[in-house]
Length: 289
Image (cartoon, rainbow, N blue to C red; front, side, top):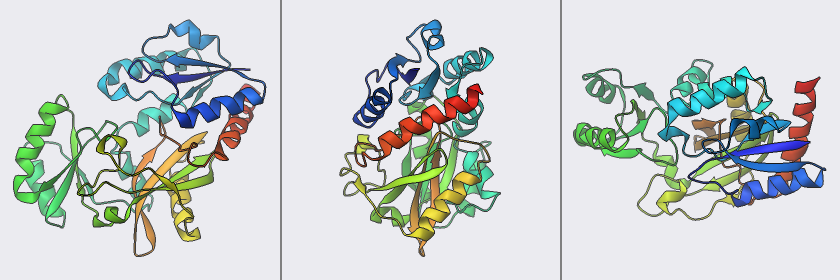
């Protein structure tokens, strides 16, 4: 088997987590090609038995190009994990609202749809601060915490910085000070959890904001059940998934569901890498049957 691992022009090399995954695939007898989605020729992907999306971390800067690439893979019926349809749905962070309609606890979230919608959103969300977030993006780019009275000015700044992307307003969750939990799933089953804490004076836990390193975390069964229920609400089979959230009153509030290119922290919990490799071959066999 030849497995293509998709990265990107901005981040072409495998990160430590996925290096372990590639090594696990090779131990199972696979060959691994690392291919940049926006640089490699399409036929290079076609020579692979499966394409696994791992580090396409610049896709938000060329959403139409990324969608076109997914369209090509889908049209050619090459096995892609996760599926292009699932990635398209997940790439718009408003997908959280679909989960909320199925009973998943999320922060209060209101998409901005017009010039007056910011004022209306602020009225509907409690707290002295709100979170402004692009509807598509990554790495915490364009995400900021704004005092209610300064929200319009902050939104103007972020709109310019992100190239006028659509935004949404979210409730600020002070529990983030205690850390965000990331639940990693392989083939729909919980594999491990890590705890990510923000740096002092920060609320964002993304690596660009200099947080402490993530650490393994033994999550209570009820929190694992909440994360599992959030993934089940997607209603589609996944090779990999990450459910992020904070804890309030001993229950998980899902802040994000990552199905396109999440870091899976296999360098933090290495036992997950062989599980991921084995699941890849099982799902590929099922897709080819």
